[in-house]
Image 1 (cartoon, helix red, strand yellow):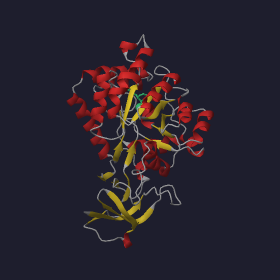
Image 2: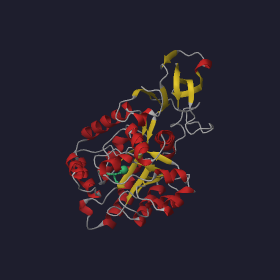
Image 3: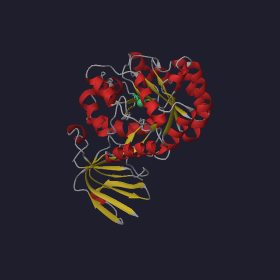
Image 4: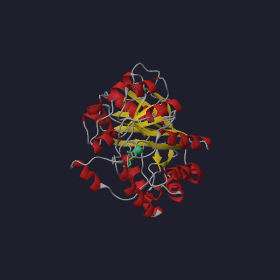
Length: 382
Ligand code: NIG
Ligand code: FE
């Protein structure tokens, strides 16, 4: 059955052939059929369809592509957040609190948690989500985290190398051997990607290299958490290895930006983290000005960024990171798609998946202009 969505006041297409970044069209219409966009053009020239939806001049965008989240967990870290707001600083060690709670949780509880957060995301316009493991850190708990995640998305990421769990505190090399051996073997059938938290207090560049290369040998493409808590080697390692994405990029040197500028590696910025940890926001402007592709993602997790809202991240990126509303919306749609190596989502051109967001607003600018307001009126997901 074909559906004509018409009387769109502002349509964000992200058409790369357009003159402007968002490929904006006014007084537009879109036809969707069989889960795909089959036609995009002027409302006055729209073809007939089985069903017609008149959106009354509102804005329509591609569904948001959230390329970084950690949704498989149990427990609550509100006390840690409260302490941070009273002056404590964020530390990677908090991850172990969630690991203990996740190991103790039933499959049903973990599944219910993911379902709740995916529903939150959907109601805020996210139509594609990447979900990582990383709170199990045993062979069985990592495999079950990914099995649960894979019921919700094809974009699953093995993050056994999140931190060294307490039982390996005296033997980090033994833990890397576990991650690159039996844990990877158990996780790989459920994972598309492999990720490492490359940071002081987690894994160093040599360990990250070994883990990513073991994953690549089983067909998992790499991505990295890097330069979140301080300067470090992760961004340049990601550029050197040609990873699809390097995420956080909070502390960037000029050399880091240089290293990224001639690569396809997407710098994924996660402003919910800076909001929730009171760290400085990453220098999005210097990345964009250098020609680096930038994505925005939620990093939804119980420690550093417990938001599921890409509209919130867009508002932060505009208010505090120097992106224009158009750049921020692009980063949360087409940028996220590039970070996941996907050409079928993140834009609305003929052949795109029919993943659309209807705003209760006349333009994409309202996503930053009206922060905290539930502007997503409807989503279509193919
Ligand atoms: O992306 N940086 C590492 N992992 C998460 C935080 C996880 C946690 O604090 O539980 C992140 O920020
Ligand atoms: Fe993360």
